Length: 205
Image (cartoon, rainbow, N blue to C red):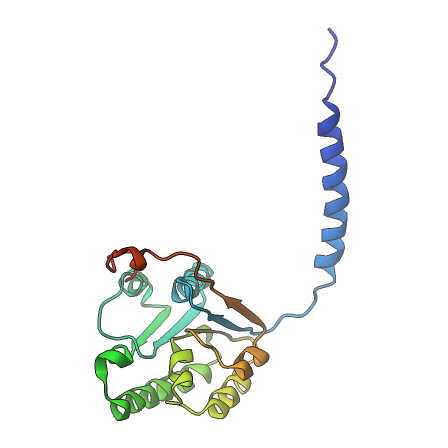
């Protein structure tokens, strides 16, 4: 019985993929550095904190310790905090904001809350047993000069060498982006708020 001949496009595809694999293998083999990363999620689009908590879940899946400090936020209970609380043996979560700045309307109070959140953050940044520190909405605190940027950069630079940091929030400072290993800007293309859709459980919080 004659076997059906392989279609030419399949053979061409296999040849192309073999060449691509060879190139990819060489590129991957050339990456030899292992270090703690400074990651910044910024931009006007939705998903900055969501992406950070995805990394937290990934790290927890590898049985690595995670610390979270939330600046500014604090007015509501989030679904991600409730879910990740189940990993309380590996997880530290500190929600230390008092709500968005347009809600508090009190600059001195906002500055005091951020100073407290930063004091907690520096303790996490000094611990070698914590693999990932998420500083949620720190960019907002820096934008309004509630914290000194040079102080933040110094603490980040002095952290344990294998500790990863994710900083979220709009309007990341250029100096922070320059110090980062990875910067992702979330772009706003379309948002349901513009159509009158309110914040919903499981989507916004």
